[in-house]
Length: 397
Image 1 (tube, one colour):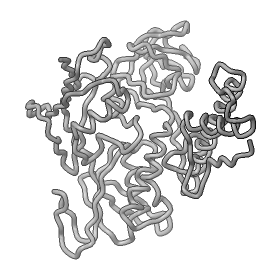
Image 2 (cartoon, one colour):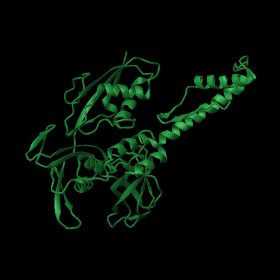
Image 3 (spheres, rainbow, N blue to C red):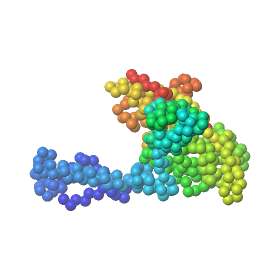
Image 4 (cartoon, one colour):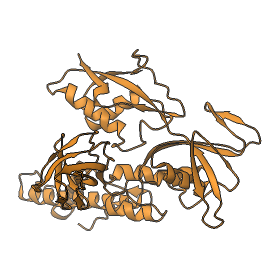
């Protein structure tokens, strides 16, 4: 049975289907024991053939999975991390949500130890980062950190229940919303951002600028343009000064975005935008003004019409659409700065996650227009479409 079965070739990985593999093993058995050998699954030879077929099938699939780890568009886990390090990038780690400037009140002089707990109205628990002592007025402020990683949101005044027994500590309240954390970047998200940061080690080009911006942990999406001409140009509705760049960035602090732009834009090039940040050049000590824009939110509504099923589509479909909106699926990211919204892509995203759902049509509208259509919803270069669970409705027929 020394037949040559090669699963990795110069053209890629070959994974034969189980029926083909079984037929190959049966032929090998008959070549040794004769053509009249009974190979039905219930026979002794058939049982052995089934076992060998399963083993070869597992080997072929394992070889395919291993070989694919050298392909950055398929690799995952530590293999993807290793490939990404070759271009200087890395996966974003998980981060806990923070509440800053939280007011603690009670008996003057009371010391609230670090690690003391408070509970938000949503049930999420937060711990006090550093010990705090109440002043003579019986108040102080401190920072609370979520116990769990992930995007835990807390609105202003949403942290108001004390969960630790500290004598003299009587109330807690957050005047501002939480700085929202995040989960660790998934393989799908990491593969996408690796493609977006391939020019991380270069500078001066538009690709280098976008790579540097996407390398910022808090940047979710952006749109960037450049004008290499000697005259002012209007590109995609944006006015750009001569020899300048324009970036519209979602996420990241103003200082981080400005420094990333300053480090990646060619010397002498100009900037465009309504956000102005001073950046200090470390060698000369000279201060430069960096300009960029933040996207304008365009709230939209999504209506999905699907064929009725035994399951509750009014609950399932909105979550599937939200996964697509949040960029959790493989492929290009959706709902980014300057990107139109396609009803067909939303329909495809639903079927990608649940092929059993029959989507009949997807309709879109801006909240302002409130006029549903199956056409692509146009989004300007400096805008970004926004939609949450409450913006997604489902009709079953």
